[in-house]
Image: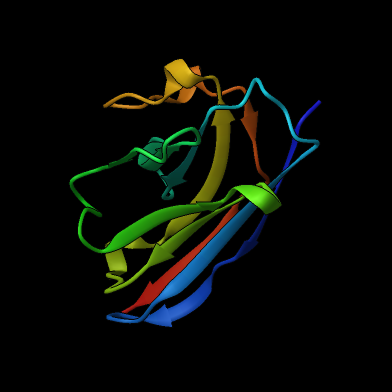
Length: 126
């Protein structure tokens, strides 16, 4: 059973930056796609960014493209979400997700991901 542990998040003013981290253990060859989703109160969970672990191809939602960057440290089995130029509408609970290679496509969707982190709160004030 793969466990995803998230860290980072917090509160920041609009225009600021935050970084989320997600470490998966144990290492599993079944995981080829890592992603970040977010869910604001009263809204559905939406995909934000995804990365294909073999090759590093990335996918971004239009709402974060150019502001967020997903990256990986394969040696540490850790994925990051660097969030810059944050806006109040970015406020949400952010979830790390992992799944097979087929999960990495646009749009990437929640049912394709097998493992989930516990969530990290990101709050952006105006």
